[in-house]
Every structure is written in C-alpha cells, then in structure tokens.
Image 1 (tube, rainbow, N blue to C red):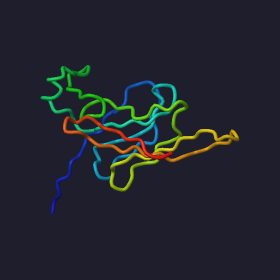
Image 2 (cartoon, rainbow, N blue to C red):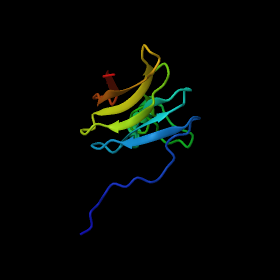
Image 3 (cartoon, rainbow, N blue to C red):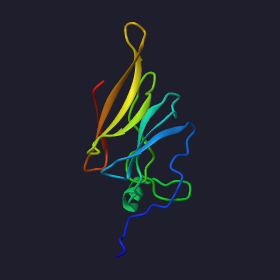
Image 4 (cartoon, rainbow, N blue to C red):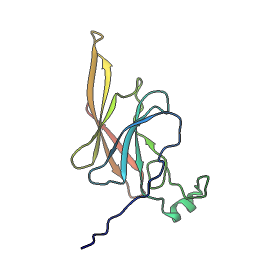
Length: 141
C-alpha cells in the first residue's frame, strides 16, 4: 500500500556570509529548523520555518525575494531565519530540541570567578502566536 508523505525539494536555505552549523529539525514540527551561525561575528542561535510563505500574507506585507517568490517575516513560513540569542561572546553550540519540541537547548561558555571555563546549558522556549510571530522565553543557565 502506497503511503503519501510530504516531500520537500532540496534547496539552499541560507545565503548570508558566515557559517551555519549544528542544524536540528524539531521532532514534533519538522518544518522548524534551528541552527547556530556566525552572521554577526559571534555564534548565535537561529530559527527557520521551512514552510512556504502563504501568498496572501506575503502580498499583504509586500515582501518578495529576487525571483519574485513570496517571503515571510523572519521566523515565519517562507521567511529568513530569526536570530534568537544575543550573547556578548556568542554561544558554544546548539544541542537540539527537547522531547516535546517546545524548546531549543544550547550551550554557552563563560568564565567563573577563577577564570576557568564554565559551560552551561540553556533552554529557549518557543511558541507561535496567532499572527505567526515567534515568542521566545530564555530559561536556565
């Protein structure tokens, strides 16, 4: 028996200068991708929604990309990646998603009072509002 599955065509996801590393797909919402990148000079956490932008929302916002495809706002369907962290020295790595797909886990290294490396695990709780805007709550450290 043939099972129908949603298949995405392979495409380039990032176009900016800087390396993107540690991509992790959300276990419950596989259209959500988190990764780390050095776009701003230090490594930070980013979130990308891989779904295409609904034509009506892109037209209303007047957003298109070079080849005239509709583009959403950062972190929304069809939009560019949304930067989630703004840490002074950057993060160490994206660890992944928690089991229910509601939080991104990442590590960051600072220095304790003895100037020794102090690596800590952080959680970013992700939720989408009715208007598609991503809300992020930082927990832990």
